Image (cartoon, rainbow, N blue to C red; front, top):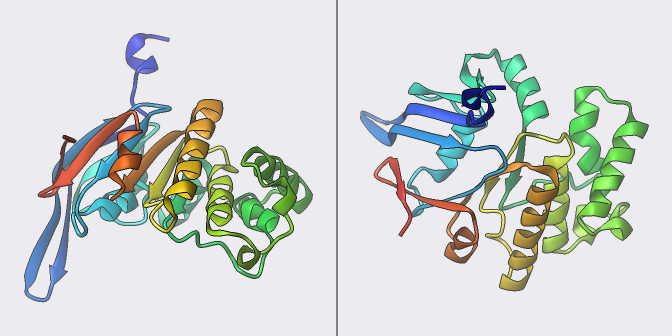
Length: 232
């Protein structure tokens, strides 16, 4: 393999623009934004509320469409795919973690983690086995049969990370993953993120207001005036 292939970024964003209509006005959220992210990198993106952090994450994950520009993940332009193909691509290549865990309240932890595999078409027994192993890895082996309401905030977020990683995605997109947690629990979740990053080689892109969390990442960028700048 030549160096140009070996060192290709896992995510490549070129001249990304996102404009929203607000009545008669147009609001420019992202302006000619470009970014490269390497495989296995931990990247933090910080910025004020309303700066477009979540918009950027949704564009990377194919949950929103750019006004112009491209997003490539592993060489695939996710926005060139059909809606069905996008869903399948997300299921295999991207995991999501949010500030509010979005676990299904009527299902046990093991069912929640297994759900992306079951949606893919894997049989339930095999999906539960993989989910069970991953729940063990995030330190909650004794909580597999508990429903979200029976778990603490930190435990729910650990289960959310397990669900995001159960498909062995190339990249996990985390939107304020510690924003709803106390300081001690937030540190535990960060340590878990680092551990999974080391063990699985998964790329993590985290948008956060938490400057302490951001400072622990390998690289920090600041989203301001629609574009990314070095964090200082």
